[in-house]
Image (cartoon, rainbow, N blue to C red; front, top):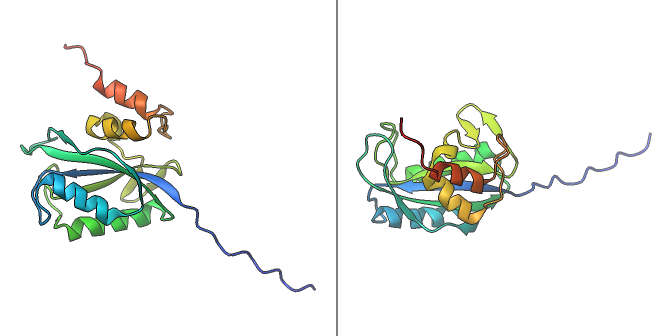
Length: 169
């Protein structure tokens, strides 16, 4: 029997994620726009980012949001990245609470260059991103040709469909 050939070292391939950032409450870094800037710094691994925009709130909150999208490159799988994002949210003072309530920072994985990911507590692409202009607009400015792995539509197409006026009943 010949000696075993050693296996090559495992190389983790970096992948790209689109992460949506939102804030509508002052925190220790200041205004929601300052919270976004601080969260971007905490994220690291950024290869591109959108400008920060203002958007109207979803749900019962009456505070306007500051929103942005960042592209990050990391070897983390989606579940590991989610743990890191939740850690950043906690460090910024986010606590579990009412859905749609005001928050110092919200970090969501929107897309992953690895395609789709389904696990308990995490679905990528983000379940609601196709209907959110405050995500699609900034994302289309960064990666207009990136395709949604579930629909095959480009980010530009998705953004245009959200922006299109709907006929009234």
